[in-house]
Image 1 (tube, rainbow, N blue to C red):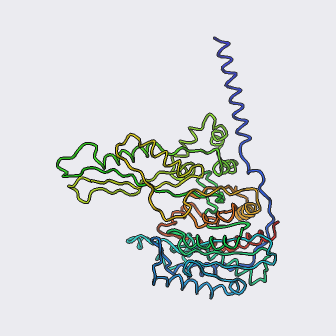
Image 2: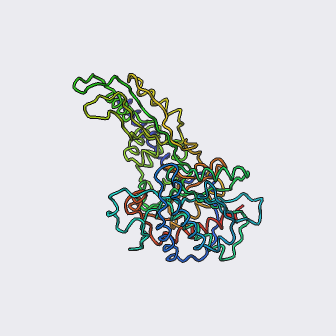
Image 3: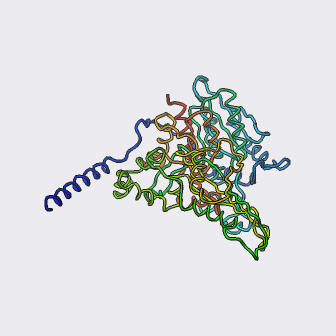
Length: 497
């Protein structure tokens, strides 16, 4: 027995040693990331840029449903576009301007001196989400005032996405004013309805595809640097290399109906409730062994606690613990799996009438590891015991609603973005990430696999609550940082081979 216990202890020590070695070797950037030299940006007047953002916010380019703005209600978009021409004359002097999708989505072309070079496509959008009725008084400054106070620009669009739009214009106008002549053609696309379907960006991408344009990089909104990062508690810059897809399903049960005084057992609403409970208790499987999640954790490893690195490095044994720990937080759960969100319920029209038709709408945000077919198979499997349940796909109006491909990390584009993020954060880790929402750039995958989602800004974690919420705001410093960062990206992409 003593020999057995001694052997068992020895095996444990060897195993523990191997796991510690794996932990010490775990982490680091993915191989092939290019090191890029950055040029100093042009001079940007930060206060003036912040004032310009405030002015842009005052144009109420609000979209609520597909098809917005409705005919006759395009005024705020047309006024915003006239403001662009007046505010950024030097860029408008050197760039050709086109309109698509009824004249509301804009496409600018700044021709490069070397047409053989693949162009750079920069994207942002003009529209914003509405402010929930009754919450206007909860804001520290009126939501469409563009007020600057306490070092912040307040208003709907301050983060999503007029800050990007103004930052790009500030960078391009400053470069044009400096006499910069790009070698690589620069394209700027400003969608008008990203918040409801992105039909403008889809039409713009179709136009570029018809011209056989294959960009060297597509850059849109998405991630920024966050301080502190929820992963490590320290600053970290995230570059979106993929985004989740979108699928909604209708779960429907039909029944005889009748008076509520004589209810049957297992009625239509009860069966719908059982179906929702089955989906809640049987989530889509996670997989953190594949990019972009696997590369994110490896790149962030230097700032992770040893115990976290130990678990990540030894998922063959501790994978269940890793999964449960990450899944405990909604944002972490969304990062590692396709999420399941019941959002709408329909039943009877009156409280004393039994439902003849009960329907639940369930929204799935598709992880790059999954497909729509995977989700349908999962839902059918976990609800197979529920009698009379019909499953159908809800019409979303979103073209190409699957998850995007994962963009490469070993090309010029990611190297440039990584260099800008690294310099901007004074050396904080730069990691590839999965964007949980949808952006206009999902359409651009039809043009190139080098599609990235990154805004060169540093935001505090608490300010992220302003996205689509109350007190959306961005610091004045970040408005200048966006302009300088975009200018550096443009210059670096123009000189890199």
